[in-house]
Length: 106
Image (cartoon, rainbow, N blue to C red; front, side, top):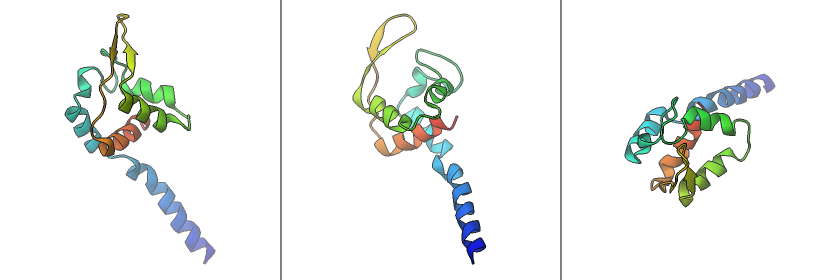
């Protein structure tokens, strides 16, 4: 009996990463919020590449909370050319959570 419960728990645990984020929905979010104007997955544009963002927050327990705050408070961001501008506030909070998980999984 214990082995069946253990196997079921292990199966549920292993399924979590696949269900943690929806890549297709994250891509739709990027387009809807016009994120690709300043960001790319693997190349620095006006803003950092999402892979760089994922690396910055890798292993940090507060990563999701920090990114959520960033995306919902319109902070000033410093660009590579030294100028500053306010980051756009995300409107779709539900899709934002999926997007954050997708970025952190890169």
